[in-house]
Amino acid sequence: MEELFDGYAIIGDQHFEFASAFFEKCEVIAPVSRQKGELKECASLRHPTRMKRVLPAAVETRNAAIRAFRGRVETPFASCKRLFANLSNKFRGNTDEHKWVVLTAFAFHNLRLVHRHSHP
Image 1 (cartoon, one colour):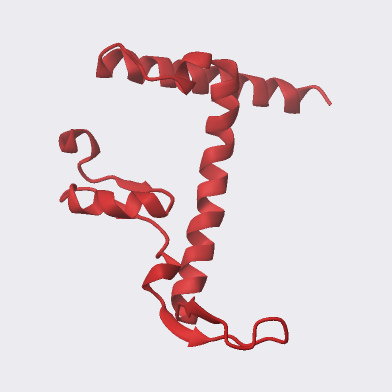
Image 2 (spheres, one colour; image 1 turned 60 degrees about the vertical axis):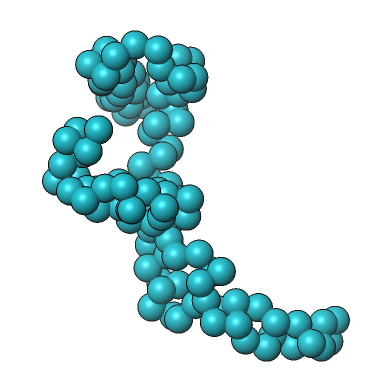
C-alpha cells in the first residue's frame, strides 16, 4: 500500500498520528494531541485546583492550520459521499475500481460546481 502513497502526504485528525509509524515514503500530517502537552495549573473560581494539559503556542498554531486545511479537503469529499452512497461504505472492489469510483464522484461534484456558478 505504501507504493500508492510514495511521495504524497496524508493530512488527518489526531488518530492519524499513529499511521506515521507505518509509512516511510509518505508524510503523515496530524495535529498533536493535548495529552502530549505539559500539565499546568488552570485555577478558576469554580475549580480552584484544576490542572490541564497545555501545548506550546507554536504547536497550537500548527494544529489550528491543520484543522483549517482538513476542513477545506473534507467538505468536497462529504459532498461526494452524499452523491455516491457507496463511498460511505467499505469498498468491496479492487484498488483500480475504487480509484475510478472516487474520480467519477469528484467529476460529478465539479460539474455541479461549474453548473451552479455559471447560472446565477
